[in-house]
Image 1 (tube, rainbow, N blue to C red):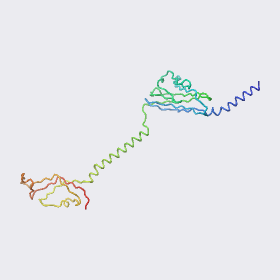
Image 2 (cartoon, helix red, strand yellow; image 1 turned 120 degrees about the vertical axis):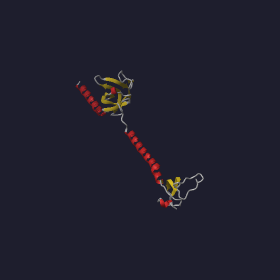
Image 3 (cartoon, rainbow, N blue to C red; image 1 turned 90 degrees about the vertical axis):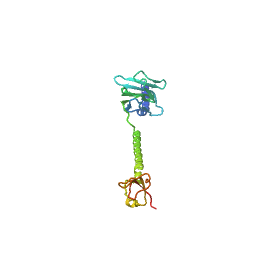
Image 4 (tube, helix red, strand yellow; image 1 turned 120 degrees about the horizontal axis):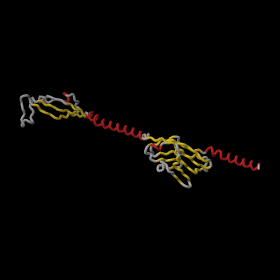
Length: 242
């Protein structure tokens, strides 16, 4: 009997020593805290880290912890997914070992536990706290896109303003002048200080007869020698000198 007992102990020790590295290496990976947003789906990660290729998960179970522990979903390879009656019955599903909660509500916040039954190590557990918020913040990608769009818009508006207003002012200069010629030809370029290399365009020219005189329709095309010529507007157009 002693010999048999000794052999059994030796065999158990050999099995323990053989399995010990695998038992230590097999772990479960969960996130301590996950934030979900009202009306959106949220995933509570749970992953089995294998010690070898032969390690397998034979059951996945998620429970909602609280005053009372409620099992919300169970998966077994031979029977598939089972969802017991709970407030989350129509809202939960699995992706591998991770839990998906659809259309999250504020009341879904709480502490969830993932339990993996594995071979050969047995059961492994991990807990995740779900926090539910009402508003989802903008992602960094969206914020960057908005900033770039604003910068481009400002640049386009600045360019349009430059070409419409500044370039227009640079290409032409308008002067309002009144020149009393006394029917004597004058060099307007000299009298107005305008360079000879520029074209002078007169618009809105009005002839004022001398005091006490009036013009008739027959004299419309004649200009008295002592008439005042009023130039309502002078536009100077830039031109390169020859």
